[in-house]
Length: 124
Image (tube, rainbow, N blue to C red; front, side, top):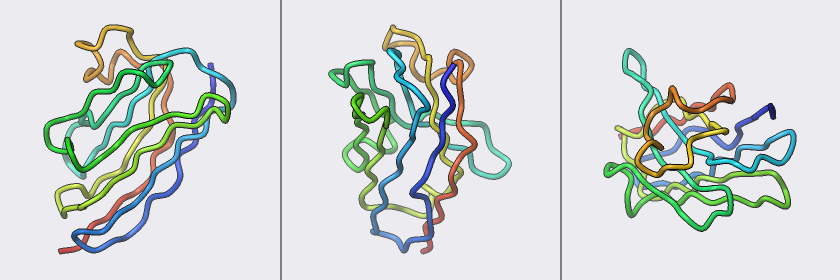
């Protein structure tokens, strides 16, 4: 399995933007995704992309504000975040080896590899 390393987190004000990156140690022909976890809460689905980048899916809470993409030539996945809100504050995790079926992309237990996470803090 590939190793995943997230970067790009930080501290921003409400309305700001951040771009997260997830670098894989090798090429993964699989669904990849971003999840997030706030203190005391469960790990929630944010967005996912299929192996080619041709299909994406978003949580309703981020739809229209976040964009997921991947560059398979660089073994890297991205999450561009705009119009950030305080409720977006969380540790963001990237995941790989997810299911092919879009209906299953929201389930963290079905992803086989995880990064260590990167903190995103949005101040009000």
